[in-house]
Length: 122
Length: 176
Image (cartoon, rainbow over all chains, first blue to last red; front, side, top):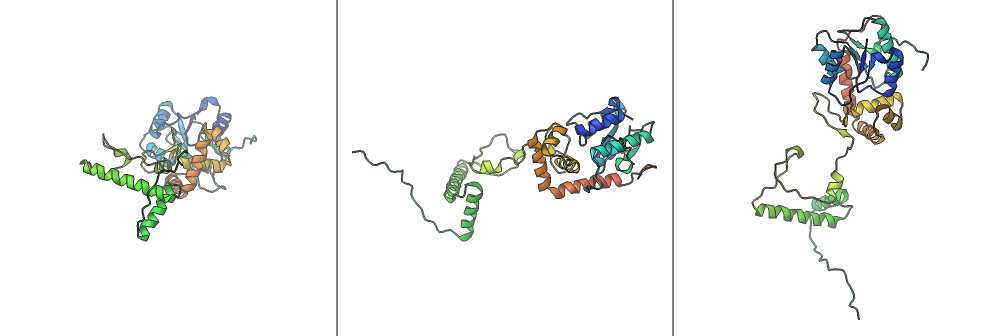
């Protein structure tokens, strides 16, 4: 699974955590300021799974695309006991990566629902 | 012998005003003219003169939205008013979007609310958030201020996203 991190989540912290978990060749930074449709098209062209907090708009795009490259959603609850920090997101993405070694093509997954893989580092 | 210099004479005019007019002038003066009612009155007279002269010249005086200005127009510039009504946000912009109404960080596909929420979740200072997203600290502070002032809107849009994500999205086996 190669991941394109959407701009709404793309802090340096999260990008670096994902890089350390998945490796540089499997994490792609967003083009700043581009539309969701352009981001989606880039992901489909490159076989990239999008990691985003923007559920509604990307779900609409996923529904309109047969055989899409996968969508990972981070849901926010406005609740400090449930909201995921970058370190939590990266740990759960690592779990998804382990559970789906062939990738998540045509799947939409809520990142919050996965058990994290602890790195021991942070 | 040098003649004594005196300031130019400013005629005083007494006018009886209904209470609501006086209240309106005081409000105008307070909001736009540093609480100086005479400034508010001077500007009012100047604007009325401009309006009357425009009408006498066969022109129309109308109000239109800022994005629907005609090709040629005259516009009175009122010191005091311009400063107060200057755009409130330097780093935030509105964008056409099917359902989001909150403002976005200029040049980014990132809403003010998302940025402010990330800061809350991560417990980041404005300086840290600025470094994390390659933005000026001023933009971060402005996003926080906007999110605080529009908390209901930001939370409603978060709820919209949450409901969309939860509606019909099966959780994979082996999940919480």
